[in-house]
Length: 387
Ligand SMILES: [Zn+2]
Ligand SMILES: [Zn+2]
Image (cartoon, rainbow, N blue to C red; front, side):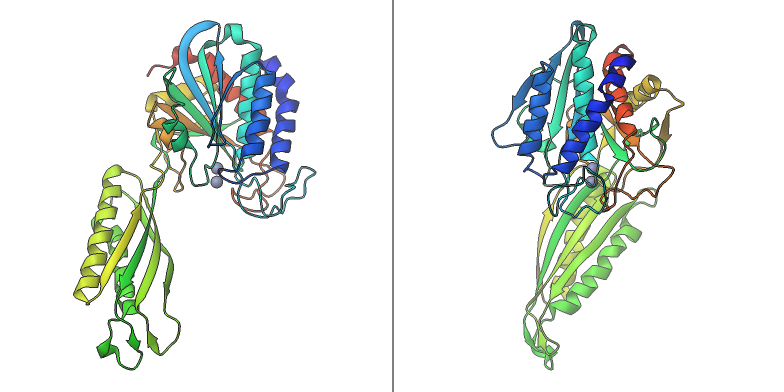
């Protein structure tokens, strides 16, 4: 479908990708990228919505045929790290790099918008192109949902994709059901009573108590989470005290907490509080817990995944049973409308592939045309999409 137009736009998509790659912007600062995206959409006669306090862009294309309202999403943010890939379109900004491929996602969605706009009389329904900021944090999808991007007209289905530097360009991976983790965090403060290191009997030592709490928290994974489910509790930071002979007054721990079901998510939140408070109290201290729910797990609709397989070809889409242990805020769009998130294979077979977030991350640009093809076909074949 529209193969010639896709081929014709391929060099443009590469050019857009390289421009965005050279000008990376961090989460919620993507004003330059948003302006660039807006201009390209307007050049292709696509209606554009902007937002005063979110660097997001929504393009709306009304097709000439009756059909569904389908949203296609790309994220636009880069990461705070120094690029170590030596390419002519290397990041021009010190300490900022498109090392997760969001430059590619943005260019691919622009390519799909351009191709569909070219054939708008044949396009069914309405397409919403969602360009979001801050996927890497603090999160751009939720503020966009709150700003109403999934309404007026109401979105019937939504699709997103992500490049990974493995597998051959032209092939895809998709997962039914839960496809990424709930990503929560907590800060725990154990408040004891400071004193002299040689007189522990006159103090309440928060260091020892935090050690007990830390060990006990791991027992939630082994003793409370069902063996059929999985979860992670990582204490990534623990701080207390200043010198060997002083018992400090308090200790602080920072946790990342991952789970793959709502039930386990709640279980972890409850047990972390109970164990922390119980151990602290029994040892004479008090505790404060700041528990923060982050991105919810991403849940793909099984029928939408089957539609992707049928539309792109069973020989090109492999179904995996492995969810991402990381998180994705595309999940917020999937809470509003059914859909699927597709992994776009972008490996090189003649050079080393460095994973996302690596300073030498350099996915294969050959994947770009296949990303455009996927989005275009998802819109054009929608008669087969039964939700
Ligand atoms: Zn990332
Ligand atoms: Zn990413």
